[in-house]
Image 1: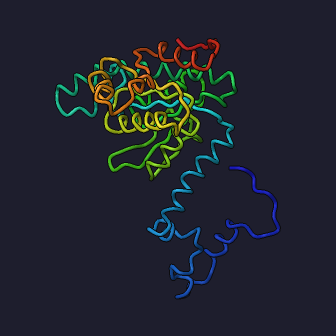
Image 2 (image 1 turned 120 degrees about the vertical axis):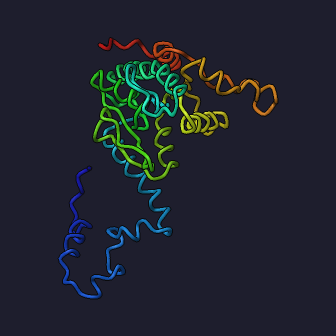
Length: 284
């Protein structure tokens, strides 16, 4: 955390410590007496929801600014896609097991894509093109792992869910964040994004892709490389050309994203868009 500026006034930390030493009386033990900013019951009440939105935004923003991170490369993708050679832990039947294990190639492509992004990030002392994922397993783990492979920091934006999840072990510890609100998490995914790579996934991945696409289409976000990894997967799952034929989107809207199959192909799109030189990395 940033060092506090000297002040003649007492700090909030000092008063929290002092309040804990107050004599136990009916007055001091009543919730009404708690300092507002140290009162969990008050801070998690319905009336303070707006404050919680602010806090979730500010905490992450504060840390990223402290680290001097100016731009990111975002990786979205399925938590259920396993590392090659590992079992599909989320499969419910043999068909899902077979399909998920076949999709493990996307784990490797995500890992390699993150390596390429991080090698470019190194040229700015890891201020630009820093890899960010949702911090969980599957494709998210692959992204953070790829950054770690080449000694680069990476960000994980986790969220509290009923059935998961601890951050994957490859997220840089002081860039590992946890969220209650999807909305504030999405802001931090896109606030610094210079490229967005979307790998095969489920409802969450589709939500993230379509929100990004909508923001670019409506001009609420500058156009950045928006990559869909896996032509076979995406052309089977969605048919945006059908929307263009129906007239519900513009004929040119499908040009807002690019379908690619390999990490090198995807990073070539990013490099061409920003006219970046090839990084002299050391990844295999």
